[in-house]
Length: 411
Ligand SMILES: Cc1cc2nc3c(=O)[nH]c(=O)nc-3n(C[C@H](O)[C@H](O)[C@H](O)COP(=O)(O)OP(=O)(O)OC[C@H]3O[C@@H](n4cnc5c(N)ncnc54)[C@H](O)[C@@H]3O)c2cc1C
Image 1 (cartoon, protein in one colour):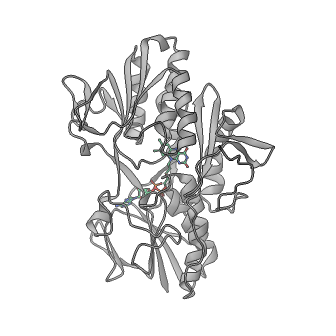
Image 2 (cartoon, rainbow, N blue to C red; image 1 turned 180 degrees about the vertical axis):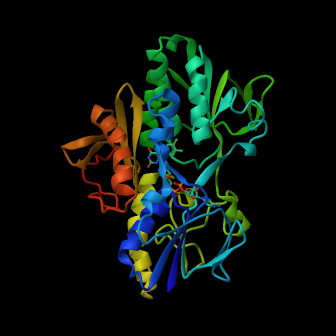
Image 3 (cartoon, rainbow, N blue to C red; image 1 turned 45 degrees about the horizontal axis):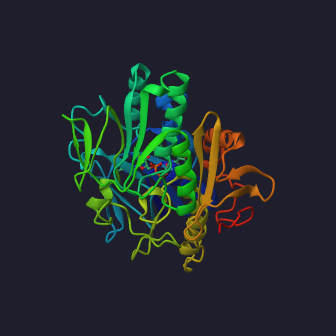
């Protein structure tokens, strides 16, 4: 019996386990998934919890429910990977051997990386919305908040779902308008980027949205510390932004087990071949989803597109052939823009998000880089697609490679 071992049973690990379990001969391959927690969260839902649109129970399901039948699920922390011995040590010291390893341990926030952020005021006047606890606490706080200066601060890139901080601000604009106190709330985005997003056309479009909604942007801000006494964030160049309510997107890092195993970069992301998804220099190890160091978005859509490519490459690998399927960096994301509307972006390593229609040229129904009600419905429908199709590894009509159909070039 050979062992296909998948570390992490989140979006990427679950999709991959289901795909492989239905393709590999069960008398020849054992497919095992290891994850440290029982609950699988639909993370895009965290965005809606602070505004009371979703409750936490709407976005969590038992992880085992999505790892059925012949998949061997081990509920345990992962201590470290030993690539020499081809084993993984669990938190209780027990070793697991592998013939082929897939690392899908994702990324998490690390507020302790910013001086003064993770102190006693964390969860009082400083919050995150990237974790279940953070999103819930922020929701409780917002209900009673009567206004002031709300600063969304991005610590450093990369972060998962790089548009989520913007979506948070768009939804905050709607939320305070509905509560009748928008005139009492000052909304700010403070970012290390030179604008709203990483790519120029999208940056322009989203930047215009922020201006139209009266949201101030402070770009090129590399946060060094939080001054809790004065309630301000301070950059390395000593520029400052004051706040009444700080919503932080702290440093995102790969799991510490990657660092302990000596497999990560300075942020514990695994150096990965950007096309084949093989871990650099490690023949039997592949990396999927947020755990990679790849220059594309850290997003569930990326985990999905990558899983199609990785599936091909793993099938080739176990037959002793070189990996020939190439990931092109394809990412797409609905961007909630508030008041029942949204945008959609679709891009890859080479092509920035462009305007147009998706997936059918001239028809849509989704509008690329433009606002529409259908895009908002697409975003809200996605939760159903996630639980019922995506996680189960069902082949979707959308191709893993980005298509230029429907996209209009910009001058
Ligand atoms: C607020 C927010 C909004 C988002 N919006 C979108 C969106 O609109 N569209 C989109 O495509 N994506 C969105 N995302 C991003 C998306 O959720 C992630 O990119 C996706 O979940 C990545 O999948 P993954 O499997 O790589 O990581 P995860 O799904 O995070 O899974 C990693 C798993 O590994 C396990 N693990 C890690 N280390 C260990 C260890 N040492 N021991 C045991 N288990 C371990 C964890 O428990 C976890 O279950 C959003 C994310 C957030 C936070």
